Amino acid sequence: MVAAGLEPGSEVITTPLTFCATVNAILHAGLSPVLADVDPFTQNLDPAAIEAAITPRTRAILPVHFAGHPCDMGRIMAIAERHGLVVIEDCAHAIESEYRGQAVGTFGDFGCFSFYVTKNVVTGEGGMILGRDEEHIARARILALHGMSKDAWHRFGDKGYRHYQVVECGFKYNMMDLQAAIGIHQLGRVEQNWARRRELWLRYDQAFANLPVGLPAAAEEGTRHGHHLYTIMVDEARCGISRDDFLEAMNTARIGTGVHYLSVPEHPYYQQRFGWRPEQWPHAMRLGRQTVSLPLSPAMTDADAQRVVEAVTAIVRHT
Ligand SMILES: *Cc1c(COP(=O)(O)O)cnc(C)c1O
Image (cartoon, rainbow, N blue to C red):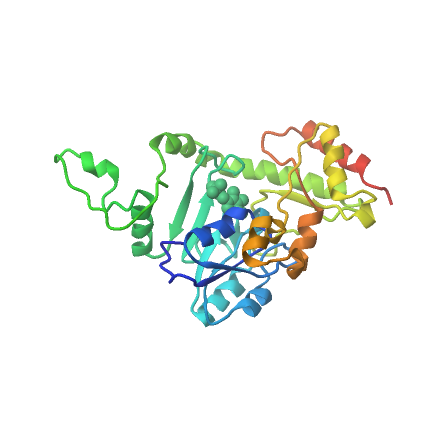
């Protein structure tokens, strides 16, 4: 967000159905987040809602490829071009995702990836930025290490000591060699892990087809889903159990679940700072109040998946 070089107070349009980091990154850069509602089916930013949220101060769009489902980058890039906006893609869920044969994270000016422990490449903490503009990436590199003009390694080269210059006030966001050493060996397994998650995904789809739960949208023709999260919707009226009671029942069955995510305006910080109310983005609000992420990991056996299927089937009402 900082390397994009937007003037303070610029508005950045993003989704309310995301991890708080997406919005916090905008705030830490001194910019102003503007939420646009999601498509209730794909759970991704709705391009029509983006257009409706544009003001004279809008400078950027920050789409999140939610759960690995690629956003409609055709329409988002067309909107960005029409209005002269920067696009920064949040690819935390989407290492493997493609839109019309092109990897997500390569459409916008920047693509941002996370290697946090819950993601599909893990370095403990850390991540990666892709950029199309070399100057932007050079600036991101400098910002990531205190704002120093030469990275730390080159300070101690064979040619003797070289002075570095601090050219701006940067951060401590560099990746350690230790982290890189852990991460690099996972790259070779990304595809096979994806294939296993896909198998489990299809198994769930089949097993839940006749239950009253909502199922995740399949990827559109010509796109590739990252299959990062398998999220079902538990609507109390249809399932005979509230989402939170469902989570409790799964826990009692010794099966871990997640919630991705309560919509951003459900949290007190944003309500107090911006006066946001969840009702302003009704699709994100409903999804956030009904969604449950089921176990989805390449380490799962078929028997593990079967246990999940049996627990879900036992907990929801039968029709
Ligand atoms: C995990 C996540 C992030 C943050 O990544 P960190 O590496 O933990 O900072 C941002 N956006 C989304 C959608 C995420 O899931």
